Image (cartoon, rainbow over all chains, first blue to last red):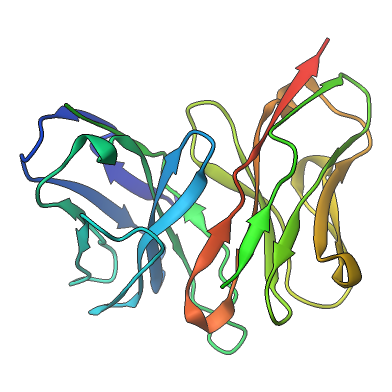
Length: 116
Length: 113
């Protein structure tokens, strides 16, 4: 089944304790992206990647890191989490359609992170 | 920079009634437009998309949307709402090769029996 898999789905952690949220897709998609969803704010893009070793900042990258060493994986790293990073996180991927550039996103089920 | 506005935070309709969810965008060129639906506790699922051509696009679950360039709008419609349509709906604009996508704040749909 074509899917985007995120882990963990739920996590409670403490301020300053490094954590990684993994994201993996099995569709051979070039494009991957991370979003956070907060009440009343919709989805905001954190980072995205157009292909292996190609990443760029979205609208809210502060406090996050990403890497894209393999096509299928795009982990989100919180080096020193803070309470304002408590949120619902979504990973998404899509085929990159080249010239048209339009991307239809397939989303993971989400990872709910609480930072105390 | 692009932006998306969904003016209605919450809409309540009766089952069987028609539905229209509003979406306005701001972008300097022809955008790529999407509607996604998020059921409680789930990820987002694509309902429909507009890239070019016919301005009335059909999606899954009986939804349709109309792109109106003059009004910078991409409103979502359904002629008869079902209780299972209760969810949160997001309008989004993609900006092509730039790789960035912007979502509206979402509209929560409640369906009354």
